[in-house]
Length: 301
Image 1 (cartoon, rainbow, N blue to C red):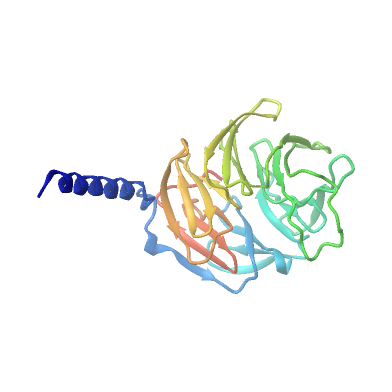
Image 2: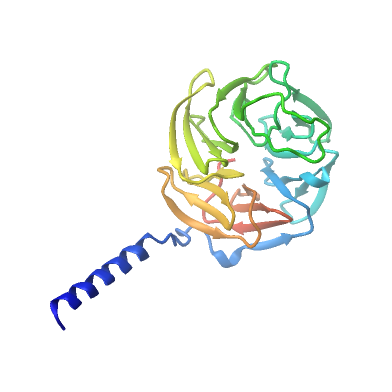
């Protein structure tokens, strides 16, 4: 074999090895067993907005059917609330109220355990929100929520009041929110760390997720691009790993923004949370279906 052929073979081998090394196949990072993914039900229209209560029961929305469902720790499904204001994202506040992004009229609702509803927020400086989408509530009861514009076929309004898609902050007990993040294409998924120091916001329109520092007054600072991936829903585990929804599954990143694992899901997932009595079961809403997956870590919610 002449030197030219030898060099060519070496180059091809090197390039093949390099390309193989770049392929993202992170496996499970010892966080879960893929075969344990379980389909619970698949007769919904579009599931979203899952949140666990203190007992580990999960509440999730079926927005086209205008309902909020409950999946209990003993595996039973029941309707928690009919006529939910076309609820999308949800999150429990420290008092046990389920706070929902009531997309129908661009509102935030607080829903008591008995189903009684209260409108927390209806507008921003007299203008209707685009459509509150997802939210996170810190230990004090302060609310952060995203407000992207998605035209809904059930809306009676024909134009938007707000020209931009932004992120807002509503301090506990306040009646007026503050705009704390702007300049995004379409902010969607949002979640904060247990210590209240950092907030992660996914700009699904740009395919990026950012990290912000939370200031003492609730403002956001130090915007940092953390992951080149957007997300509809997000959650965190006890190790600080960040879970994002993607078309073909759940992507798991460490706190540095490095991808460490992928959960394969047959239906495209829209949202995720940790559930169960020990908060060690990942609950996944995925279009018309819902899934569960036992985890080797716990969630922080």
